[in-house]
Amino acid sequence: GLGFNIVGGTDQQYIPNDSSIYVSRIKKDGAACLDGRLQEGDKILAVNGKELKDLRHKDAVELFRNAGYDVSLRIQRRPQNGPVGHRGDGESGGLPLAAILVPGLALAVAAVWILLRYRQQI
Image 1: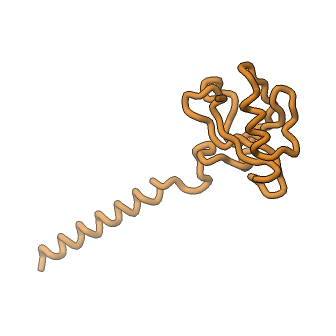
Image 2 (image 1 turned 45 degrees about the vertical axis):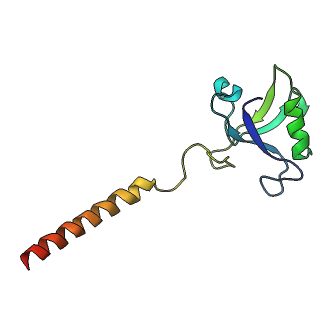
Image 3 (image 1 turned 120 degrees about the vertical axis):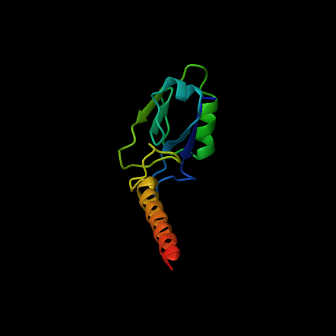
């Protein structure tokens, strides 16, 4: 295969009121990953010159399956805050988990240490 998964289509809209086809996942060590240009969240506008407009999901999948060895994709890069596949660009947009867990863990250790010191004095 081409080394990526897609979402979207007229029957499976990924974004409400948008039947476009998007890259949902780049498979590790697949053709798209090795090429390096395609990114998760990119909108695919055409495959080998064939526009991907008003297609059902399964029809878009068929186009990719029958694309041949040399495949030309016309894409629209995902905006920074646009749709993201399951992995996206690795950023959640919020605080990193470590920023919450590390101070919480430090407080818990300090509380246990104080409790143990207090019990020794009693």
